[in-house]
Length: 108
Image (tube, rainbow, N blue to C red; front, side, top):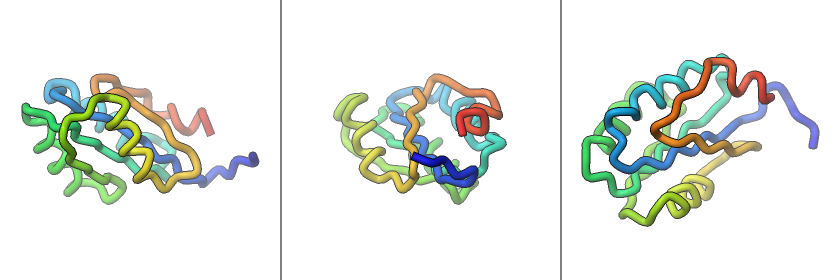
């Protein structure tokens, strides 16, 4: 498979009760030097403010999609995100993690 320097990368983030970590995670992805990304936030029935934070970020960046669903667990949330992805490549980031700004640039 040949890689184009502008291929879309879909980044799926399953979210469940991570309000204390979520902003740092999302900010690290928004700040990527590789800009051709879509960010799919899958709210897996969070009972804290995680879902609200997702909706706030939806308004801030057009690359963000938010999916709210009933709790089905980590694998289910990842699968829902994958089913809604449009990228040539799909990446998964845990919602309590964050990445360096050149993470996807270096991968491509």
